[in-house]
Length: 208
Image (cartoon, rainbow, N blue to C red; front, side, top):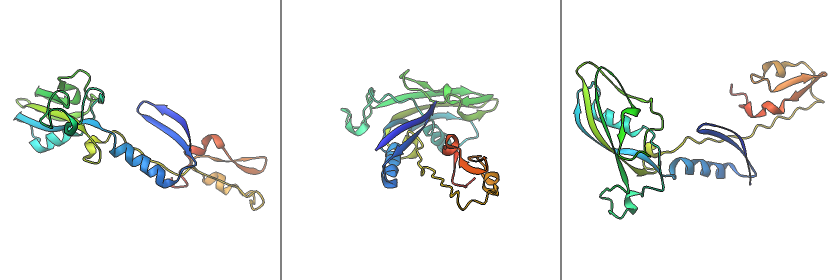
């Protein structure tokens, strides 16, 4: 197996992996999404909710907010010395108190652990009107994507590497393929059609 990182930007990256089967790549994809533990809000205790959003919808939305995870500081609840009762070693508490008017964002969540916070602070949670307010306590724990998508740390996909071969003997130099290529990967030079290798990764096998 040969792995080459093609590019990386922020939380995204693309790799070229050679000499592996699609089944192997799919197992890697599934493992990335379902077998890597991350923190996510699992319990929400709402003491006050005067917003237009139902309690269960609010709790569901909170659970889907990605949290910064420190795997060195937290244990899986089932492996913790507290035997699943819940302690500072296997869970973290986040509180939220807000009054309208205005939009409540993920950044308004206050964590008892400064190392655990929303990855994307500008995620909107609920809009409050004048006189509306919410007050709640949320408990986050480690979990796996196979339990619930809120514990999935990433989105991973794979596809076949594009292979384009041009039969120069059969080519009648009509340039129709060059004009039809939406990614401009096929180019004409000196009366012949060639593949622009620098753009090959942009090819989506004509699903454009």
